[in-house]
Image 1 (cartoon, one colour):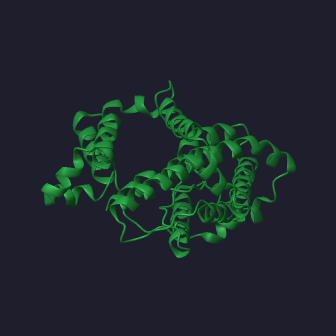
Image 2 (cartoon, helix red, strand yellow; image 1 turned 120 degrees about the horizontal axis):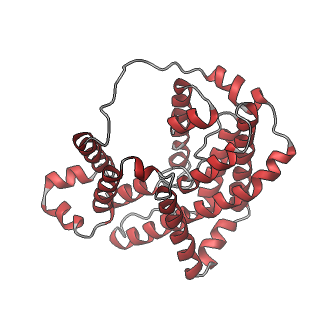
Length: 291
């Protein structure tokens, strides 16, 4: 995401790292307020956000467009939380529609990666190997007995997608798809003042009303994509309740939506993020629930 923010928003790499650090710190809001979700982005919609932002001139206008989009997303999430819209949707939405949202978001992400400009073609074997190993570690029914039988495999599997990605990365270097990285060690200064002056609503100014209006359709699309994550969390905890009746973890879509809305609002005001803030990081959520 640091690379994407550098390319799309023109943010220096060092500052982009600080953006990500703040984003990661805001994940802690979920645990602090009793929400068992593992915070994440609204990842599947990133190509849509980038296309939307590229329609504005590079510089303050593009930053304002992202601020407007993130604030509109915050308004939708907070509204759905305060007025219990998220709870109602999870309980009353027909199963066929839930399935459509989940499958649609997945297909959208896959189609984007396999499009003519998708990332899959930059290193096809490496990405496919990493994806298959990740699916095996997280979702395969074959992997579950292996965890119980072999302590070594259980130790590796507890890190979720991290190990499959590392294996794929090394494999990519071996076959020549991935170049050996040049690593430079150093410290990144926490230039929060510079971020406020150049990239926040207090520095670039409040976006014009037209920017907020233009962002409404994409904000709604982002919420629909993110709602799929809410459905996944709800399903994961219901399945976990059958296995662990001794520990009752309560997932509330209402509470989760309010926290996600607050995260997006803080980002929109201070440190706008291209990825937006979503209800859950599915890979991490599956890993934690499995453990």
